[in-house]
Length: 617
Image (cartoon, rainbow, N blue to C red; front, top):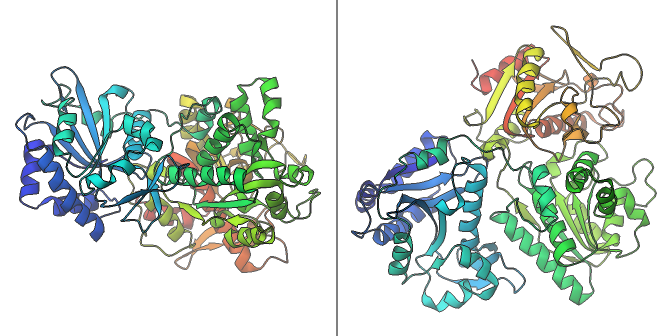
């Protein structure tokens, strides 16, 4: 979605008349996007005057196009500035990352993606050349398949940064990114102007070029499952951006430090659903194994991600699958790992780790994790603890790390949203809807996310089945309400709903449910889908969530008697804890979809309430 798109002539006029902040702010509100803080308004007012001066040259045709604040599809990232045109030969789009920084410094010689600026209180941020290049990659990967890579030309313009800092911003450690996206400083007006002139002078021949990026057919999303196969061959096909690369640099720096100081290091990365925790984790795994030749393992309690990632990485080759056994593991391996037996332990979904689960032979899963690895990396979302045994959070990790005298790095938060059509607002909306947190997002205003509420579960399944035929990236999922009749040999169906709807839970021996083309007809449980993502999901909301007396309420007695994992039905579980677990479970289920979420509610009142909140007639 583009916030502003005008001719170069109109853009210059709006800047000269000081109308840009008002125009951009109004456009943001009309399109239902967040942003527009006073600092952002000040940034527009400042930076766009500099871009007007750069483009104030007769070499540029007045009918070239300017686009400002382009929201990249399926992310919450916005490109500062783009100019679209032709250089007498080919159409191009020049991407400009704008910064108001006046000072910069390197983070460390090992941190080749990150830099420190005077505007971020000495917190590392992504190098602007990397930012610009990553935006090019995102546009190329997410947008219309007809857009050629050579069409996109990224650069960065730090219009307040003096020549004194050129040796820092263009340090050799950033050379890979400055080669891809040159960086221009305070006195480089003519240089950036000439850079743009190489690609743009006239109006683009393709008058729909920008429209095809903004509104054209999206490529199938490069979800984590698809990217892993090439990742472990050293190809970073699934690109990290902004705070992901900053977190990546923090992690890699700690790993390199650990090889010199002979001390334990603990790194904590937090982030909600869809913020790219697993993307980052697998990138770190690939770098450790392939480039650094370290003994590293990706470890998660959730079986579904382990099995699916291993299957995709191995390409179905049994020998490759054996080789991956040490790279992708369950926490049940920890009791058999000697002290510091792992150079790097990457613990995804660490909020699911438990003290001493059934058949676990160690003393304490979290304690064993920190003891097993010289560098322990924990990916955590406290709000995704969905059973009574999911006790560990950020504070717990810090406490255990102190016991081992580990160096504890400052926790880092991932905030950018890659699922749910890149809408951070949708996550806030769900928090409010489900009563998890009070937020300002009380009504659904995110039109690009396909939300549908169904009165008939058969119709929902029919629509999802059609979508799954496109690329096998659609699944049906449900909460804890339904009995496991087939597994317990009590009947042929597990989930029986009105209008003759019948379905089974995912098959017990189908460890690859998320990618198995034959598994669409089976409904996945929370443990099967947590940590996974799909283009579309269909969520069955059972009788444990209902609407009455003007509120969304929970009913712990509606949880299946076969539920042996959540602990919601246990007498020792308080009503308050049972309630929060039910609400968290549905938040996880409702955030599995990248492009859309279809919903069927057993409770008629809840169904009507959701239609109202989602603005569905």
